[in-house]
Image (cartoon, rainbow, N blue to C red; front, top):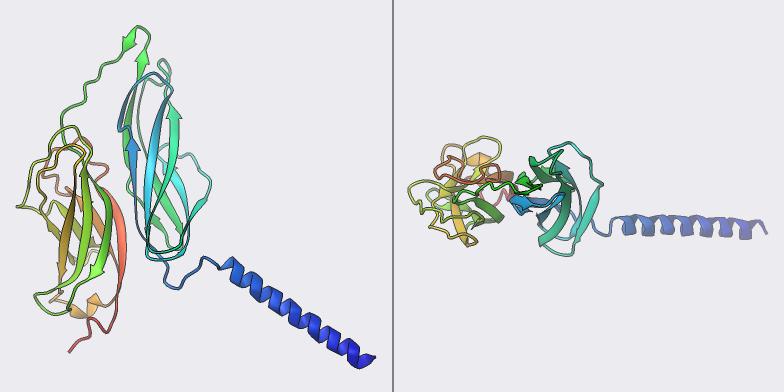
Length: 280
């Protein structure tokens, strides 16, 4: 009888351990070693609202991850209002779209307003998107306040990604940044090949990075730019490991835009294997 009790106790202990393992695996169903958010961006629609109030501004966000996993995020806005924590699940590397809306404005109390919203990534790594800015003008009794929209371009980065080059050696591109730039403004953007109109720079301030020019873009038109990031001759040992690059367009204010507050896309990360840039 005593042996039977011991056997049953051991069986119960084993079942408990097995259940705990199952629960642990279930709670980490979306976990993946090395899973990271590599980029995040937000766009406001409309950028300028003129009409009856309260008006509705919609924000569409893009979250880019390097594989399968769960991303937790929240929305931030300029008035300090708090938003609940939300999540989106990735089954593979790619981009997921999220959205939110802001209803505001009153013809007599709040006839005009300028604000922004952005995404804050909470996990698996912390990151902030750009601040998607907007302007709101309410219709007054007796007619709409006509605030003409100036004809200017407005360049934003829709998405960006990094990839390894073919060789890690002097005078070769160690990395390539592919960046999709869109003109969401009201006029054609001028072509600029003499400056790095869109660029990717190491976020630590090391000076490692590059920029390229852009062709002329009509309103609503997009362009995929490829930015080569060359071998760091002054400090080759620095290249190995994880790096975060900050993506910006028109960082030097080389062209006149409707809004310069949406020129920053955010950070995109990449892991450079030690074997890829091994010192000879």
